[in-house]
Image (cartoon, rainbow, N blue to C red; front, side, top):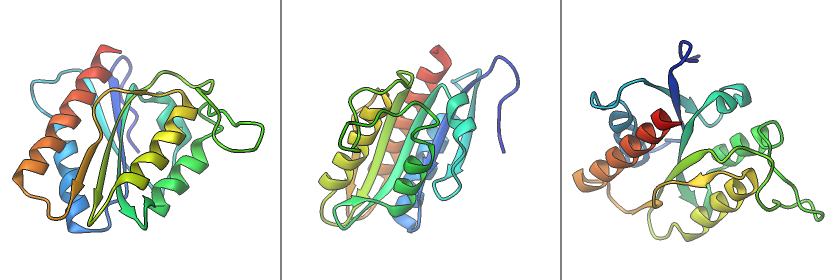
Amino acid sequence: MGYPPGGMATLLVVHHSPTGSVRRLTEGVLAGAGDEAIEGVTVVERAALDPDADELLAADAVVLVTPANFGYMSGALKHYLDTVFLEVGGALADDGGAGDGGGGRRLPFGLVVHGRYDTTGAERSVLAIVKALGWRQSADVLAVLGDVGEQEVSAAYELGATLAALAGEG
């Protein structure tokens, strides 16, 4: 399960990695988050299809990883966010859509999106929901198109290390 011992900061990496490309990016994030230069941070990996609101509430930072599917985030990541949304302080607007700046914590987050041709809709959909959670975007979105090479894995590593360092500061 993965709650850290008392006093340790936690970076939660929530992902849906159904392809080799997305899995490589997720592994890059996890490797960066676990960099030996970053001390006092426990990294918890969570499959998006297995949501745990308590785990998210205990996190000091989060990285979300998703493929872009038909102009949207993966159904698995949408399931995760739908499941935990109200439990972790999400705000709804009067029309039932995502509200503005929810009652949630200003949790630092990063986002990785992989697509074959476009990631715009997936990025927009995730960012709308995390805005309603009140989270704080703490790194540029890592949007990767096409094949995932060493440069993209390195960028994922940097994103993971950045969010782990931020978790340790919190």
